Length: 436
Image (cartoon, rainbow, N blue to C red; front, top):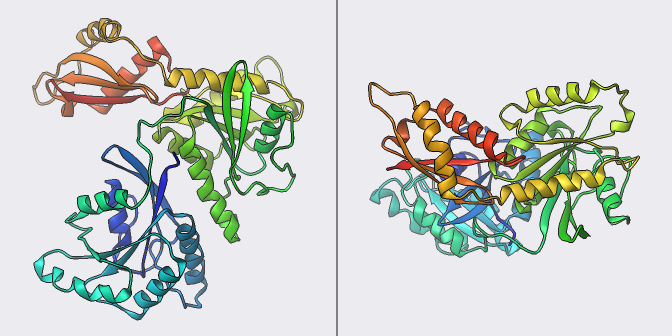
């Protein structure tokens, strides 16, 4: 099932970014009284009652402004609304209904989209008495909320789930291995898929930005079924100049959400950029399997030390993601393309791997007894038991007398030891610490 997308829209300074931060449970969007702070759309994910969906924070929507910046923001907001499964239209109870609110409501009514009217800054009962006026916007029952203090946020999330179809976090498709082919523009994504399929299913062009919608293609290889998801190339923000390319970036994010394993393609002549690492971080945060596919290897002058030099350079750039395997290919010369597919299959199997509880404890308990967690203010921390709670992605639960005091460095130590013993190549590992 495809993951739902929610767009938060409204005029400037009604608390959209505060609501976004409240929903995702962290301070990601900049919150300021000055209008226009949020210019680009910001994406993140919400997990609620075992369901997961994406949420987009947008800039202040001014339908009739001729200001160039307002026009750019308006363009992004309208694309976010067009792609969303649910639109949260945010108004401010303290200022009441403004002409801009009326204009936005008119646009939303004509669009016949799935809209929830959220009246923000309802901090107490005195504010609640002013909510009724928002029925005049013609968008159904207004939903009172205080994004700042969290009042009503749980009820809002419940109602959001009632109004759209989203997947379970544990929902998996056993029929096919879903591979999303992602990367910056002109890295060879469509050419890779065409070669694997041995047919021109996706348009291949020397001009960047040709592939603008995800294209799903079925493939059978070595008695296994695959779903290859081609996506639009990721573009630097300053180079996005038309609506359809904004739209493509959002579809790329959605393709990543659907994947089991991400084949992230890089033009080896251009190297791994900050944008690439940011997208890989997002894939890891979504607990996807990842393979780094370095294309155009045929254009590199090589000796026996070249691969090792490249490997170390990319590992240093990946930082905490150095568990991601690398493979050097040439789509042009059809070199190692099926080896890349074999590697992605191995990562898929690693992601679904389960370690028996008895074996896990036989390995971990002597380890933590030999190297105990650092004591905090004289309090001795013990780990008594560990089990793998789930796979795809692998989640390990450690039971301790003081789970909240286990230092991040010790958590990384445990993850590194798990990888040394059980590998989990290309797979993010989730470690959870609970009270004994």
